[in-house]
Image 1 (tube, rainbow, N blue to C red):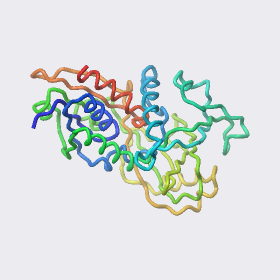
Image 2 (cartoon, helix red, strand yellow):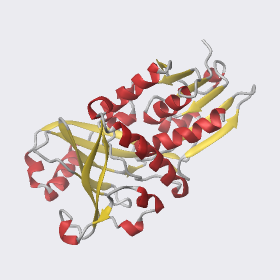
Image 3 (spheres, rainbow, N blue to C red):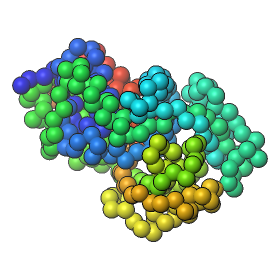
Image 4 (cartoon, rainbow, N blue to C red):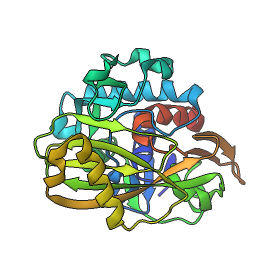
Amino acid sequence: MRSDVIVVGGGVVGLATATTLAERGLRVRIWSRDAVTGTTSAVAGALWWPYRIEPAAEVGAWALRTLRVYEEWAADPEVSGVRRVAGVHAGTVLDGLGPWAKEVEGLRQLAPEEVPGPYGTGLAARLPLLDMPVHLGFLLRRFEALGGTFERRAVDGFEEAAALAPVVVDCTGLAARELVPDPGLLPVRGQLVLVENPGIEEWFTAADESAGATTYWFPHVDRLVLGGTAEEGDGRLAPDPATAAAIVARCARVRPEIAGARVLGHRVGLRPARTGGVRIEAVELPGGGRLVHDYGHGGAGVTVAWGCAEAAAELAVG
């Protein structure tokens, strides 16, 4: 069966890109090694915020486009998995952000006494928070309703897809390191702890991008997601008990009730960071096909998915 486009990769970036192309009336298939709930995207926290992503000159527009999509979907959170939730970015200064910050409604600098924990600065915001297993299922249903096809299929190169479609879009995340190959990709390990929510309604982050350990929690309907780590070059997927205990302890120093919350599970994901940042680029394949790369989103694939999808779609079909 021939298609107009085959998108390789079934995480949030792949689903967004495939849906954007299907909305243009194209016949689109997704080839994904994993079910959507088995992708790295399913492990994400996942708060909209440009975190650990380059290039700075492009990120703002991609993130704002994605923000508008999530704001619309937040009107029906049970279906979309997207809610707008209030919270605090500790250790962050408004003047230190890019021009995109002026377009985020309600973002404001806090007085020192308003910032939880041992932090002297912080921002208040009400941002989209995504329940990723619910959200990925929502995206898959939207894609299939447009006539798209999702196939579980592992690949070891793009030639097979190129034989079945004139355009192939590479949304393979960290796997692009071997598939392209691109040695500039490296894993940034993120470990999370899921606990029963002791009544916390607002999210909190205190992220030091120069450190391998961060402190944050994200409240979902049935759980509180605690984090985290940002361990560059670490490809371990098994949860580390000592790391989990340290995550809980850091969060409990800010909100003591977290210390007694029952642990529900552990998650590990590998963020696909790339030297030089996100790669959105079209290359010609032998035989006249076109390969469009859309990978390297680091810790912000959820944040820029729809902006990057539009950029990739333009390169794919114009």
